Amino acid sequence: MNLSDIKSLDSQHFLQVFGERTPVCFVRGEGATLYDQDGKAYTDLFAGIAVNSLGYNHPAITDAIIAQAKSGVLHTSNIYYVQPQAELAALLCQHTFADRVFFSNSGAEANEGAMKLACKYFYAQGSKRYKIISADHSFHGRTLATVAATGHDYYQEPFRALLPKGFTQVPYNDLGALVAAIDDETAAIMLEPMQGEGGVTPANCEYLMAVRELCDKLGILLIFDEVQTGVCRTGSLYCYQQYGVVPDIMTSAKGLGCGFPIGAILASEKVASKISKGDHGSTFGGNTFACAVSLSAMRFMIENDYSAVAKEKGAYLMNALKAIKSDKVLEVRGMGMLIGIQLPPDFPAGKLMGKMLARGFVPGTASGNVLRLAPPLVISYEEMDAFVSALKEELE
Ligand SMILES: *Cc1c(COP(=O)(O)O)cnc(C)c1O
Image 1 (cartoon, rainbow, N blue to C red):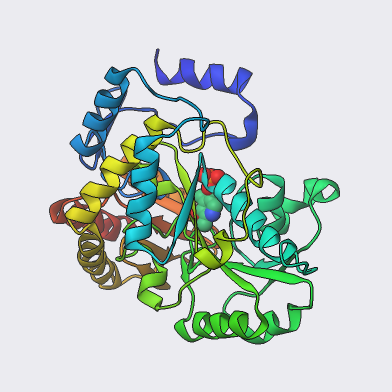
Image 2: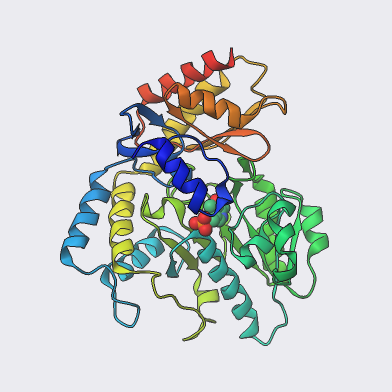
């Protein structure tokens, strides 16, 4: 099947929520290289939206998939004990603030669970707190509750009538606005330590520290959505570790399975102790297959210190990008291997992405006219050099 056949099937039968897509279909990958149907090679700088952190056909992923598939057991349900689920939960607890973990199938689903945990924490104590405050330009997912938490009118408007109550958004990095929004029904503040979809905007350290203090003072919970920033991406296993600000609940997904769908809710014992049998659940969440693949990926990344890899490669890429002298580059920002290049309003990031694609590179975009880079962490320095010089040429 060639690309125009696929395009025609998609345009006739697929729900058109993605509109017209970038006209490429990748069929094979190796390392940080993707190949399209004509065998054209592309260097990937987006990792399927910060997902494929170990690139393509990595033995820690491919071998784990084959071994688990050959056992014949992909799913048993959560009625029974699931060994890789228990091991993955233990690994995450060992390397983060968390005392307990629950697995989901996506980032949005993890955030839904995180908000349920916050609500139950107060309900169990007879408190009326249930509201969630999040930030403008945040992104928390596409389910009704996560859309209600996502700070973009664009995502909320058509569904306003059906969105759950109890959600407000305040400007990011603005402590005064947050303080003003809190009332005696506020249960939790949910923030990305660095906004990804919103334009690759890191939180100010003083802000996050003040938010933590505020939560402690008022007895409300702090939730970090690390769906995009987690799993070594920003130069530490989770981004909060670089800020030194510890949440009560945290969510993870995207890079957690390095391409295999899995999400996680991580919680401190303070919160977890208020959760009882029946409060939450999932048929597929924490299934044997997903947990076995994620466990293999996570062990590999932790044992080989991919946080340090992301930090070093990210600093190198950031410096190279900052050295580009072009009036089209207004700012280069980010942490580790999650980098945003701020472009002027009259120079659309989508168009630049198309030009780079034609040159054999796959960057991404973020809102606010930002070219977003989230390369596979296995990308080589030579590949990053080649991208930067191609970008430089394109900008000239
Ligand atoms: C991608 C993303 C989500 C949603 O994850 P899905 O797996 O698409 O549901 C939630 N929060 C953040 C910060 C994200 O980047």
